[in-house]
Amino acid sequence: MPAYVIAAVNDAWDQEKLAEYRERNTDAVAAHGGRFVVRGGTQETLEGDWAPKRLVIIEFPDLDAARGWYESDEYAPLRTLRQSASDTDIVVVEGT
Image (cartoon, rainbow, N blue to C red; front, side, top):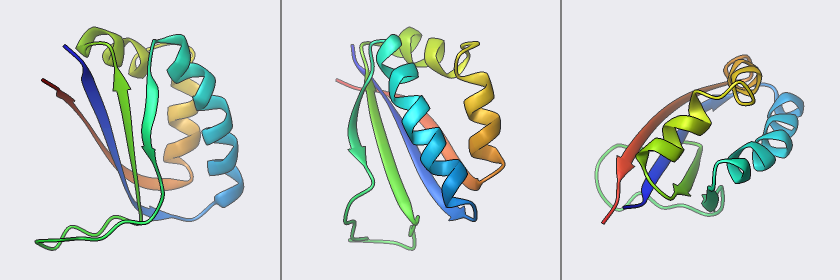
């Protein structure tokens, strides 16, 4: 069953670091069988107060693959890089 990592960027203050993060994370995601479904783009809140500056949705084959990416040695320095440049909420949810 697929799993989806959903990242909501609430604030971003270092675009250079984030560009490096996006570039390097592309390979890290692919190494764990993931693919980007949404990576920024135009968004519109249809209901409620949720208003992230940027949304990212990554599809993985299953929860284990998603957790494997997030907990990997490859992603650890990228997570630190992202955290130094933005405030982001990230969840993983199992799909259907």
